[in-house]
Amino acid sequence: MAFPHAIPGDAAVQSSLADGVGGEGGGTQLTAAYIDEMNTKIRAMAEAFGSSVIWWRQGPVNPAMISGHCLLNGIVPLVVEAGGGGQIDFTIEQGVECTLNILKHLGMIDGELQLPKRQIMVEKYVVYRSRNGGFYLQEDGVALGAEVTKGQLLGKVIDPLTSEVQEECRSPVNGIIISRRLKMPINPGGYIAHIADVDSTIWTRDNG
Image (tube, rainbow, N blue to C red):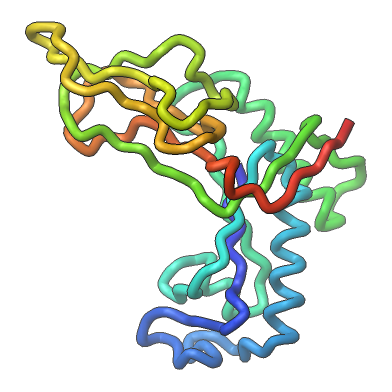
């Protein structure tokens, strides 16, 4: 999944490293023209990356982050999440394709972009966490890319000693599962799933 971080129109900048107009830690002034040009390049790169879901973030720039430092120094940044959890599965091939797409987009290698049949860009993205600890049992069908409805049961947290249900974990939004918990043991506040909120969709594209 791509996490493009665009610059807001008011050129808001966080931290004492920046003065709110241009970053003291960088050589770039955040003019309206610069913001428009940079945001256009960021969006084009995010779309070319080729993930099915894109989370478009447009908030204050933080120079303490690599992406923020790039923005203040004329470098087009794109944050992505690919793989993780020590798992070897079908997403590895998708990650390779997306990486090659970026190289093609930047003119570093030749070739046509390999894009999914449909892409969606959202403004809201939920990191859903449990309230209780125990063992997490995921419901069937809650897989990567699965569409879920608000209130749909994602899984249950059970007491490992009594098998009693401590919590029913339900989707807080209508969305698409971007990632989900793999391990059973869970602490209070443990990660359950990342969900793209489809009600905040700002762009879609059908690629055939």
